[in-house]
Amino acid sequence: MKTKLGLGLATLAGLFLLIALIAYHGFGGVARVLVTAGWLGILAASLYHIVPLVFSALAWRSLLNSSWGSSPILFVWVRLVREAVSNLLPVAQIGGEVVGARILTFHGVRNGVAGASVVVDLTIEVTTQFLFTLIGLGFLVLGHHDAGAIDWLITGLAVMVPVLLAFFAAQHWGLFKLLEDLLERMADKWAWVKDVSVAGLHDTIKALYRDRRGIIEGGCFHMFSWILGSGEIWIALQFMGDPVNFREALILESLAQAVRSVGFIIPGALGVQEGGFILVGGLLGLTPEVSLALSLVKRVRDLLLGIPSLAGWHFLEGRRMWLRLQHQARRAGKR
Image (cartoon, rainbow, N blue to C red; front, side, top):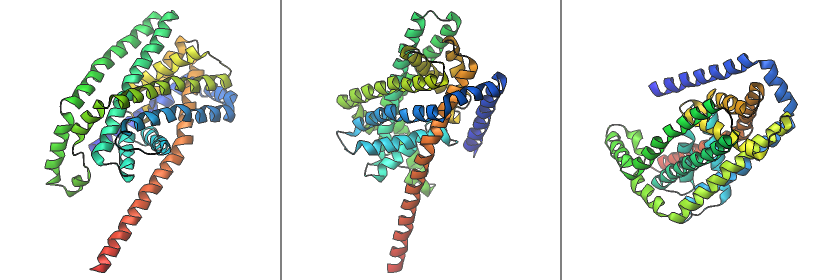
């Protein structure tokens, strides 16, 4: 109950910040930029997002290739669901990873393996994002932009380093073993906990890390995904009438995504993403109205790609529940 209340308050705070930013810089100015881009521009940028998403899906798949092979299409779809849950539902931004692991279990992956693959994939994704941010920051420094803002960005990156190291250490030094033991004790009191199986999660995570080929492939795919994601920025700004070169698009994408990551506890990083685009966009000469419109284009993309994905996920869950009820009814009839 407290968790739901906290997420609800975080969502409201983020939504208030988003509206406040747009109101401060002018609804009319932001709307004019969006009208300039038009539905064609918004649709083009949204559909292009599928390109880097495919590489992210392949990164996840590479971790399971040696133990469980499946069509890349399955991972692309589950990746769409992962992003949709994290971006559109009132959950913390790791909620999509939990749902993604659950869907894999529907296709024959053991609970522990599915959960471990998501943990390792997320770790690789965050690590490559850090490297991607360093690339963007390097391009920014070479461009001799505002020194004060650059100092703030460097400070933020420095804060991320111990967080990354702690996440790696937790995976190798038994944090998930403690979680397994805790769930086993809880299962003695609450029956529903028995369905939340993370048995062997710690050992499975360590086994995945021993697959060097899978880790390297996953890292390369995720890095390609981050770099290709800059194309979405480039396309949107072309239609908005504020074209930038690919280097500038990469700076904007890498640093704005880094700022967004800071607000991971707020569902969809509402308001935080917009603030990041205003900050970084200003360093590149973009007006706040253009930066806000660019962030809103990403929000529209989340809706265009996310709503069908969520609908597909709910259909799958509903179908499984219906089949389970039918199976229970048949068993009861035989008694």
